[in-house]
Image (cartoon, rainbow, N blue to C red; front, side, top):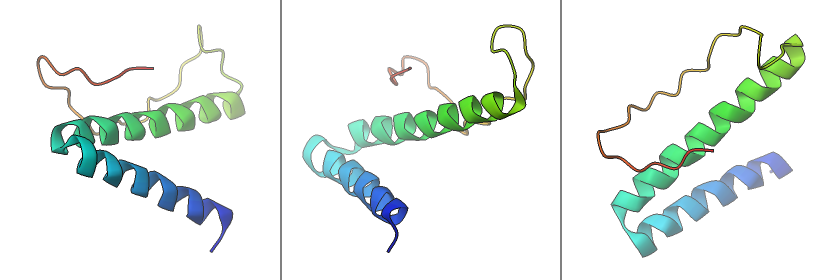
Length: 77
């Protein structure tokens, strides 16, 4: 298995430990935060490759696929 494959295994294992130790509610928050971090990293790289100035440039936002519920306290970067 490649190094990258092991990284994915580590992320999944860590998320599963969160579920086991802290419960399904915090697990869902952690998964959403992980997916958001992936989306931010992809968007940052797309902007870098496109030479887009974050302040004045226009680039299509990466869909997050998660709707925040009223009163949700999902972490934001």
